[in-house]
Length: 496
Image (cartoon, rainbow, N blue to C red):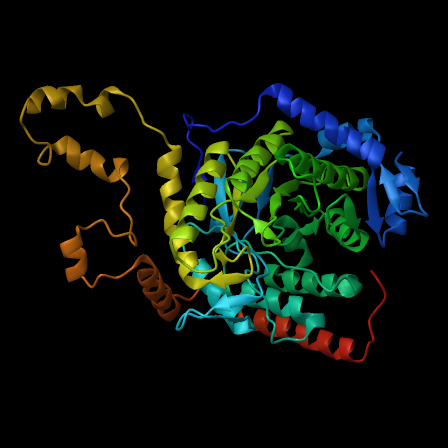
């Protein structure tokens, strides 16, 4: 299954009316035209935006966007996109008619499969996690779910990208860091992707790479990452923009105020890209959260789940594809808390109509990647189509003739109608145990976490994605080796 198609009679969960959405849009325009955005390390970017009609203060590094430019930018953006995979059967079409599921990104820890303890992540961890993801039917998009802390910081993103390219056929992304080396590293990442695609021409036909930048709440952008995104956009590739304000810390403590912050930052990013590279396909990632005032951590209660669903409505108000939290959690271990949080966030985001649900496989608010949780999330996401499809009402499903036939006191187990429909109408989990207590005890009394661990180990033992050609693998390794040598000598080529 590559995502699932939204049913035409899909039930819906709605938070806003048209007036609410109009008010959020109007307030976002006021923030951008009156308060403005600060762009760090972005003098060239500011000058380019000034030529397009923005109000610039070079001394302060700020830009204010006239409302008409924002409205024009929204009209120019391509609102449908394809996220391409190494294997075309895994392509994800952001067309408003499908829902996909994505891993989290960039955890710094991995939960050990043997003892369940958190430990700093290695490249080997990322390779194994990615190989597991490749085998899981419901996980459609592969981020660098963790990072290679055993590799040098200045080339770590290249090692991370190599790990995912070698271990999945699904769409995969990259993280670009550190910012002071962004231009140099971006060129190496492009070279690696060209090697996988076969040529620059083939890469442009099927873009396996795209730009991405995250706003820095409140109301800030890192110019280097915006400019690297624009470089990819000018090469014909799409881009993603993320906003992650935290209510009570980097945004107002009200849910509406946090959503306004997220939307103003998102519109700022969209307008910037469309002014400087019109028509670029954009996918929006809204990840609003709140500050837990008791512990100084991220709050991930019902308010975050409401905000995720609300963000879907805001993005769809503009006709844009949207990523939001779904199946994400604050829990540090597999258990009741992780199950409650994952289920609640996933259901609301699916029923709101999200295009991509983000956060599969994470524990501790994105601080650790878990093999077991990936397996559990895969099963959870398989259940969402059953919730989204609603209940079909027809002569066949009402089964009036069968009811008359069986009559009072009869049974339906032996009926042909039952045989024809029970597989479609009911969900049969693989991990969750539906046997009675005695049968469960006799079968070993395994918990959900234990079964997930066993399945993860079995997959890692048996599953191997179609490998990259050996010559391609060697070329990618050579690119990384060359980068390590150049950076060790601090002989970094000029920006291209």
